Length: 436
Image (cartoon, rainbow, N blue to C red; front, side):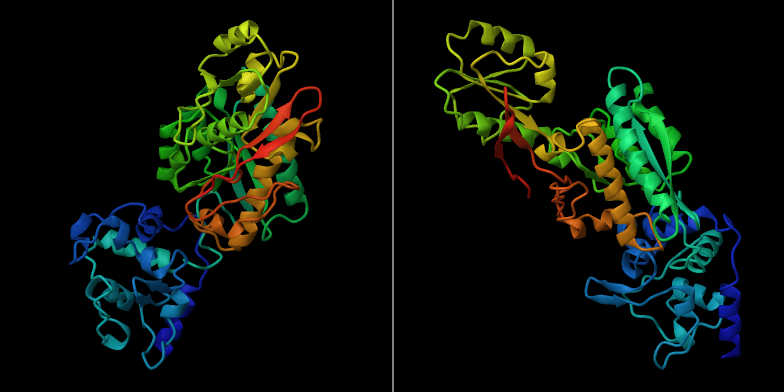
């Protein structure tokens, strides 16, 4: 018992910041493979199953996995008895459990616990990580005892600069106010910003090098390479404003606010189909046709110039359907007598809230509030997957009044497309819920 007490006392000595070899964290979470690859376990488990955290939990808190109960393996848990089984008396004893399946008091561990073949440096790295996992010293990149660094990649110059600066203003407003009020779990929120107009991947590399715990409210053209960079770094993107072609393009590390373009197209087609105008139905296509578009009476155009020509040549006013980019391409002008349907990738209430800042500043606020909410829910001890884990649990939370998010387990965007009728007096015309 004295040896166990000494073992625990040694384990609880504070470790110097940065003393833990980074490979220990990566090995525990499965971010990097063991040197022996699939041969690291006798059953040749792939990396996705061989990592300690997959069974014992990201904070070594223990959990059930595949019908097997994996016990907690924090250093404190290892250094105290478990029922009638004695505590592990030393770090070497913990190492024998990992390598040979020799548990407390020499007992043989269940076969569900893999026997690992590790390099000495790998074993030492894992033991170093177990000394701090689940404690206040268990800090992922971008997190310190008193701060959380968040990143944002936004177009701050060039054609999209005004929109990017408005998003940034909304983000700063929320994050600065939160920090001034005491932060989240006592941590102030820092924002690292890069101008995406220099190139999305270049800007992302700059932000990730700081490092940051998460990205918030960034937007850029759809870019699979950017998503791959975030996934490789295990950095989630919360309140993303990336406008994706389809819902399937959103990876597990992103939580979008905006409805995908394919869903906007379906909503717009439905609004034109229900239009009762006597004249033609003309639409500026946002995405490729879908199975939901069954009304052949709609004439779709791929270019705004072709649509403008058709409007000039139309014999009588009818119904016009387009998105925000299409409206801008037409100079915001709707011909007299036409009933125009405008599809939005966000709730229509954003257009009426704080007209001085416009919807872009509102979107920045929404992204910032979502990040603060998820950080609060995640708790004081964070890990790389803590924020994505809040996605489904936050369904119904409203980062802006009247705009609750609709995340679910397999749905990674917050809002549905909405359609409004525009003209002399814009008003809500239709709304769709295509979530899955």
